[in-house]
Amino acid sequence: MEIHLQMLQSQIDYTTGFYSGTSRDSFSRIHGLMIQAEQEAYDHFMGLSYLLPAQAEALLRLADMERRHRKNLEACGRHLHLTPNLEFAESFFADLRQAFQEAATNNRIATCLLIHVLGIECLLLAVHENYIPVADHFSRKVTESIVDDKYSHFNFCEGWLKAHFREVKNELKLANRQVLPIICRLLDRIQLDGPVIGISEQSLVEDFTIEYDRALSNIGFDSCEILRMLSHALIVNQVDSSYNDYRLFFKTSVET
Ligand code: FE2
Image 1 (cartoon, rainbow, N blue to C red):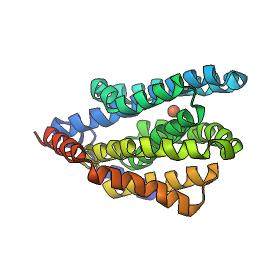
Image 2: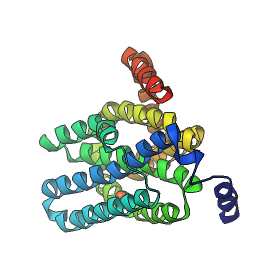
Image 3: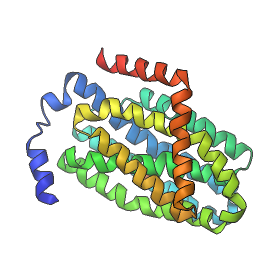
Image 4: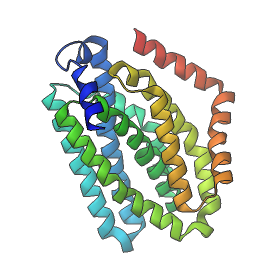
């Protein structure tokens, strides 16, 4: 694995081509969304600490970890003289943020936790794992440590959902119907920029799907239920004509 990474990295020139021109624009969007994801995660844990006061101490610790991740990722950008595109990143997460805030306002804790697990942890784990092979040495070390920390976030969220699975199962199915199509759009959007900086489109989708399956089965769903839940997003996005407009809009904005 280490030799494979070194071979890949030896083929990448970090000072020219890879981080210049349109590649640099793509990289600043990917870098921006990785930073913003940590901010969204921080906001989630802060919000959950009010919804689950008995676990506030653990949640504030997790929020603090997310704040540290954000700072470390910002350092990666400075190291490469790269400005993250945070304006893009904030709009990237807007729909997911709105879904989380609506759920929090209505005290739907299970929905909040599922949005966090699928929309932040699973999605970003797929991004991080595919970014590591193409990252410079400094960013690779930082990203690897963030991936290691992810399991403490998964453990808290999945642990709570597993413990309350019987009473929240239907709520989780509804939440999945609402947010999985949004997450698939985000994944699609990442696929437009990812390959420009060497991230494999196919591997991104594979890794997200593996994490999605792992998370839902840890919570308590069986494999048939997970497949049904996963296929829902595909159907929703296929029949939604605005989805194709959305793809076309971003594809054009990347190519111009
Ligand atoms: Fe994090």
